[in-house]
Length: 320
Image 1: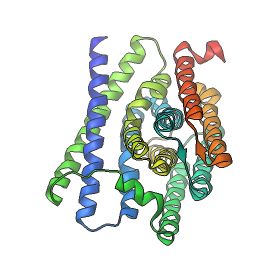
Image 2: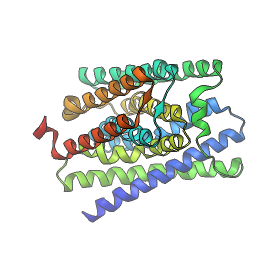
Image 3: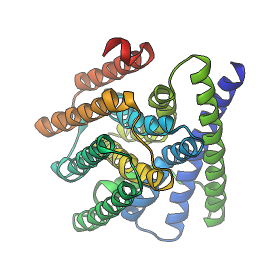
Image 4: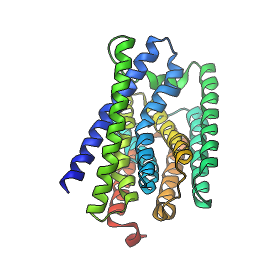
């Protein structure tokens, strides 16, 4: 029992610290090379904050625990909306532009629909993975030209929220290498520890992925979103969540499906993908009708997240 706990906690710490150094080092290196904030936001920040989900999910799939991999992706998206937006909304009511909802919100909902349909119809295989990566690349190109025409937009602001590593290009590169090493080692420890905990507590691997692992891999998004909310940059907070969810479904799941085709676990297919879809629709509805998420609505999001966790640990089969 003690060993899995130590491995899980150690993996979470390495993952969090490694992801922080990786993103800050990559942003610092990009700025040293004169790359625009828009490109940094669309690529370095988006890919960097989603890297923990990617490495953990790949590690889990390659280790023969695809339930944990899929659970991590679905659970991260649920946590991004209910937990991260809930915390950010309590700090500062979240306002958004119609562009963020129309373009980024529509893209996220489309990605959710494609993921759900593909998972229910069969294996998430290489064809799904290739299509997902193509659609993600198309979205990034569209966002680049759209934001460039409107003065950089929210993706450039996302890059401005990241404090780069102090020093020159060499220091930033060292931070990237060190951060990447930490993420990889942390992912390996986290997956092994999480599997051990699941077996010790007789909990399914998908539940551990949906809860503990999903929370751990969502910490980079939580950190950047909270900083944005404290600075009253609520549109950036929303952009972080929309972008992260899109990258999880299209980018992370796309890569995993190409490397190791997976099936949706029975519980996730029956319950959790519908929770993910439902809270995604709920978020878009709140934002579209009033272009804001109030503190009361944020509190409801947090309450819903704790109810979700409670249902997972009590057991979906007992309650649903």
